[in-house]
Image (cartoon, rainbow, N blue to C red):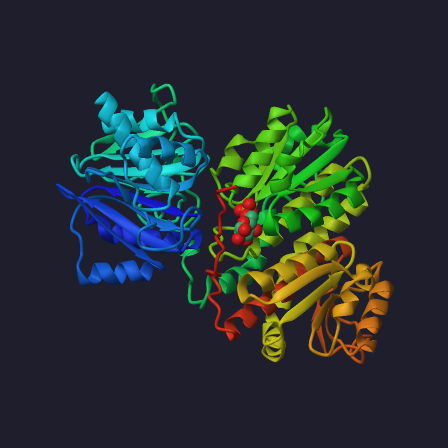
Amino acid sequence: MCGIVGYIGERQASDILIKGLSRLEYRGYDSAGIAIANGKLEVRKKKGKIVHLSNDLERAGISGKIGIGHTRWATHGAPNDVNAHPHVSSDGTFALVHNGIIENYTALRESLSSRGYNFTSQTDTEVLVRLIEDVQKNTGLSLGKAVRQALSQVEGAYGIALVSGEDSDMLIAARKGSPLLLGIGEGEYFLGSDAAPIIEYTKKVVYLNDGELIIVRRSGFKVFSVEDEALDKTVHELEWDLEQIEKGGYEHFMLKEIMEQPSAVENSMRGRMLDHDPFVQLGGMMDSIEDLKNASRIILCACGTSWHAALVGEYLIESLARIPVEVEYASEFRYRNPILREGDAVIVISQSGETADTLAAMEEAQKNNVPVYGICNTVGSTIARETKAGVYLHAGPEIGVASTKAFTAQVSVLTQLALKLSQGRTLGDDELKEYVTEMKAIPAKIQQVLDSADYVKEISQIYGHASNFLYLGRGPNFPVALEGALKLKEISYIHAEGYPAAEMKHGPIALIDESMPVVFLAMQDSSYQKVLSNIEEVAARDGIVIAVTDANNGDLDALCEHVIRIPKTIELLSPLLSVVPLQLLSYYIAVMRGCEVDQPRNLAKSVTVE
Ligand code: G6P
């Protein structure tokens, strides 16, 4: 949500900033802008996607070797040129970009207005700019110190970067709640709200923690704490490669990421699954497994697709390990005064590791002295750093806004965790071995599902004009129904609902007519006969049924318009396969409808505001 880039060095900053913004565009695409310091400050900003800004710069470039850039996901104020970042001080001496929300901006704005400051935008960011000016005016402090003092008056979350027209050798950045990292090159530095704009130039990075402020010059950088003390920071090595964040011949990142699922799931298991004791090795959680086994309750907190993975996790952990699990929307958890007791354990699940609601849930649990573990994809993210222990997905970077490979990798990791928690308690060695063997076969089975993509594409061409879809599933495939519906809503803007199949008769059945496709997850598992009855009920009302079922199942051809066959697996593992045709269906429908698959309207990949 909002992307920040910065550069200081000897190259032309605008080239690096535009490229960096393009790599961050999945974080927001309402407007984009840059500010370059070259003896004075030059700012260019444009509503809409980065291409508008880069076209503008092609017509008339800005020369300079230090600058900041921003791609916006609008919170306060409409997406237009005026509200676009960077925002500049009244005297034109510095420019600032911001990711996050200044929650007390109304009070600050009123107080600054009463002291004669003018505002041209509706943003909370401009309030921060004026506040810094005010501190400078009243105290005569340097820009860095004025920023620090102004930030102490701010409530809310921010990742900010500043550049000064008066000092072309200084970049300032600070964070509280919104990620920022510094890439270290040879005599040059790169700032990013994630690694995507940095990876092309260097793999050496420093992650900023909450409350830290960094001053970067060509000769080096200094990080300061909230108390203004200089800090020693560890330099980390990025694990991702440039090619992983490029499309690699695919038309969209989403399709690339759907197709990458065999390797993403394989990587999520690499070195972790053995067909003999200890069966599952989750290195990062080793010291915590006994505590989790003894937990009286495990609470899984997440948002969006990760929340759907958590629901699958509930089935897995409860069925296999027999430990009670609750699944919470992270956004609700914090604000409903949750009951957290000794013996509880919280696991936060997040692709980005930066979702503001999930971070808030993590903090709520920590405040109540409940141990918090993390399952996330982004190495070095806030969740990775601030949880007691955790497991990485190792799915590689996910750029498409609609999450796909992160979901299957999350379900894979949750399966591994459930198996580990079952060991020596509810599952014997033979059962564990059976699960491990089947898990190892899953990547090849996902590939088999992907091989039938053309058939799913054909179906998409027939129903791509529908206005409503219903997705129905039971047991571990109920969350898959929710995920299928979410994927369709997100990228093709078709209204879709996911329901437990048996609940259909309590409401959604009223919607069924000859124009509504109903997607059934109908694997031949313990609830198959019941699902079959539900299919009959839809067929009897002239509904259109698209069924996802096991490879050898011939029952459904007469009843359903279309039958998508996937390889057979163990019931609890079937979400890893059954979700794939639903991802493909939404992808092909969105393409057919001419939608912007990787950058659906109003959405952002990483939601770093509450
Ligand atoms: C946004 C994205 C979703 C994602 C959700 C949670 O809404 O558009 O694709 O599932 O955030 O993100 P996280 O990074 O915490 O998994």
